[in-house]
Image (cartoon, rainbow, N blue to C red; front, top):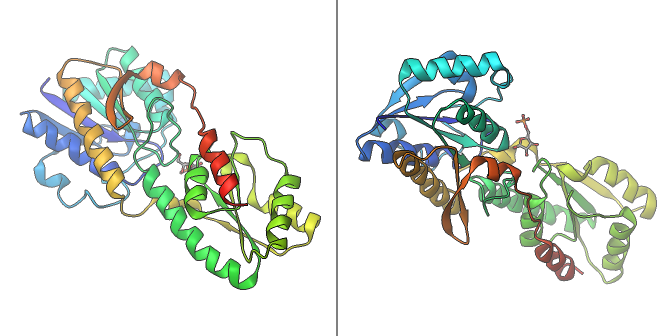
Length: 319
Ligand code: F6P
């Protein structure tokens, strides 16, 4: 193993820079040459590659986004695109590639592995939807961003004695809504993993109102439905004033939390170690605070266990 390349792909997440830094510095520490591929698989197809040194990752551990830029690349999903990528890997003589991203990125790495390319995958997505790992890089920061928004929205919701519905990201995962909802004391948390009825939500709202609650925060994960539709339904059913906030892309930015920086540093560095040990097709993750290594195939096939205990706890504590 002499030349390692690193790319970030798919939706960016806070902490990706810390992971790039860990890959670059661990590689150089071990005497390897390391290259950054720009704009994910797109850059791989087009040879958008630069050699990195210690200072190219200086002053980035605290920054959101990704200095390598990112993209969602449809061309890479074609046989032709994949072949172009393999040609570039040959031209640059990459012995191994670290990909950082979500499940789309992992699938890309799996395709490269099938063609004999040595890859390691690091989970970087705010969605926390990769089942093999307890946490993905960026999730904790996104949860804290949502929490900050809940705190602010709670102030104005209380002043006006309204209901606020906050829609958060997560694709098909309810984890951002669950964690931020529990931490923020949300009255209802609506996630794709759990059945809910608007009648139940209304019942809880009326119970709260009757015991003198001044605010009602409802968190809706984007995968569970549209906040605007729920708002209309609630208003029609119980005639209370409802306001909607869709947090959108602000959840993807911002300085990574300490948790995400540490996670990114540990996972990025381990990815290089795994490549140096001659292993390929491995996904690096964390379970019970221990770094784990799983086959990418398995990582993609596993089913995510939604934390029902936390969900029930949030319900109990918000009566
Ligand atoms: O996967 C991260 C994520 O932010 C999801 O939560 C969201 O559904 C999606 O990306 C948005 O994708 P895009 O950046 O392509 O609009």
